[in-house]
Amino acid sequence: MKVLIVYDTVSPMRLTAKVAETIGGALKENGIEVVSFFVKDVDKAIVKDYDCLVAGAPTIYFRASKGIMQFLDDLPSRKFSGKLAAAFDTQLQSRFSGSAVKGIEGKLKDLGFKLVTAPLIAYVEGKMNQMQLKEGELEKAKNWGQAVAEALSK
Ligand SMILES: Cc1cc2nc3c(=O)[nH]c(=O)nc-3n(C[C@H](O)[C@H](O)[C@H](O)COP(=O)(O)O)c2cc1C
Image (cartoon, rainbow, N blue to C red; front, side):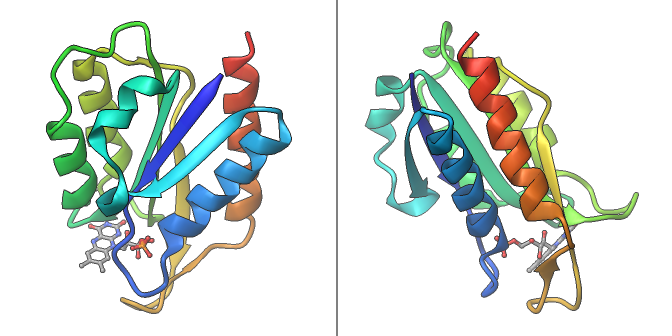
């Protein structure tokens, strides 16, 4: 089972990158082969070589960052049936925050991927461009990575 993690990250704090790294670590600890790329560094042609795509992004202006949506929009439509996927995001914990995972999951389904688990939402707090992950969110990311690994080994 080979997993490709593709994440976007836009702020100087690189919080979504940290979440991606934690998820990757948890998958590896559970015996899954993982590679992880910043969205701007990934070659789109390799996506088909993986069993599962884990895609994540920060929530920016109520939706997924442009980088991750551009990446997903550029993949060939409906060519991924039989492949698995899961989504994660970072966002403020507020009913006004919007959500990146919603758009990512919708696009993954359009592409033909089957979602293996509910998305991970990692909450952040603080001032603009000085945000940090809320306490316990990296632990949550680790547990989510473990849950993805379990779902993939079924
Ligand atoms: C320009 C900008 C717009 C943002 N808009 C939202 C938003 O609409 N909702 C939200 O929950 N968080 C919003 N945030 C907060 C980011 O989602 C949060 O800081 C995220 O963790 C950044 O991830 P990164 O460090 O990986 O870029 C925004 C941040 C920036 C810089």
